[in-house]
Image (cartoon, rainbow over all chains, first blue to last red; front, top):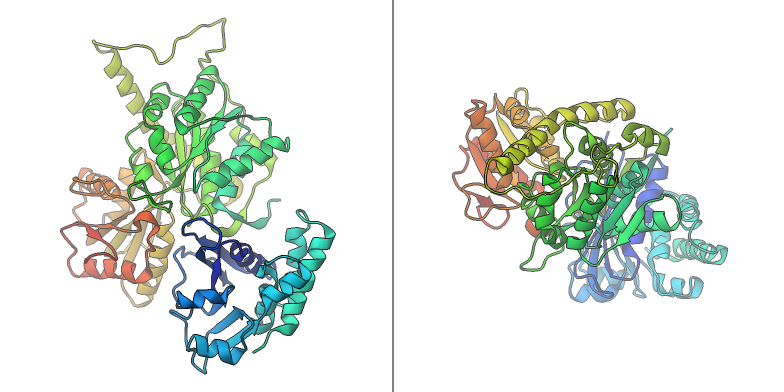
Length: 190
Length: 389
């Protein structure tokens, strides 16, 4: 039986959403899944709204078009809510994860999400500033995703982070990223 | 043993070029090709490949430098996109006329105006009559395989022509997919050493290239030879592609077909869109509809016989183009398909669609509509999908 999970990311350019979309795909690939991760670039300038997509499937993925009906939506910047309908096309039982200081109840009200939808919030920016020392909410939000969606265990995310960042970053930076994912995993509210 | 890993189309193209070990690469970065030259430049800086990398000031100079190096006897590769390809226009013809086996990757992208950095086939279709062999990849993996095989096809003594190995902007260039990278030694052995026939640097055997051929039959004779060389490329692609298929276990068909044996309604398309069309076609098959999909992996030379063969039992055919030929009765791919069917006695009517210009998403709903249109007798005008009709 084919199992396909589609994730849509809403972020601003510079927040590392594309890297996160790829991190999620690479983590799922460690489980033997087929994956796809792609950005939808607009004007390429820092701060501009962007969308990115991740597909995870037990079977090879043939489609290359945009994800219109995501099972999971991740919002990396809550100031996007003024201009973007982040729940567009979501099924009734979809999952939406916000990087925000709002409570899940406040976030649910902000996007008029029905009770059947799972809404989770985490202060990924706060966690990133405390651990990575930079406003890069992308790694912590993947930790929150591991908890809320249960696609893969947090340890697999950390294994993948070490594989991906091991070649590029200092041990200190890798440890900070691992800690940020762990903290978001623990601190996400549903 | 080659292992599966995740990579974008551009990464895979850069790896394929690295493994083919070109002597010279002259290139100029342009979105969405940039990561090909960026990655390649890093290979050079890291000493992973000993290519003379020439960071030129424009695409016109990039291809000029490539032609010079190729004529001198070097194995040459480059990459471009959109306005960059357009800026190479006069050099494209010169590279083919001088029979320079240059391999060039193109990240298929819209042309200005309006300015648009996203994927479609406007740039590459404008280069279709320049005398180059042209591949269209559906996936990142295929972009890699096509690029590896391109070196063999370009340098085949029966061909000796430049090759464009193309992949769709963003959808394939920037999307991460599950890929297999063959071992360096495997590619090295497959591609082999390049032995130029008439290198300019062979001073013991001086030759002239790109000479003056004015009144009289010389110019026309040269053009006939060029046509024959490009026609010959079909056999070379078949031969080298099948050899690569044997090594990798991945199919290398000049025309990829799905469900065509008993299909009443067939959609023909190029590149990444084929995955969407096949996905929708599978769903329609489950509903009992006899539908098929045809995807030429090679556009030049155009596989007319194979396309006609695939469509011979169809009641109706639709072609989805990702560019238009303004003023023509058909968009570029539809024009080729019509000609292919007529020349091979296939009478199925053809409906024309233009979709995905400037990176517009081609939705499953739109694709379903195309199949529905065919069932209802087809259309007699060009339909811009998602905009009209």
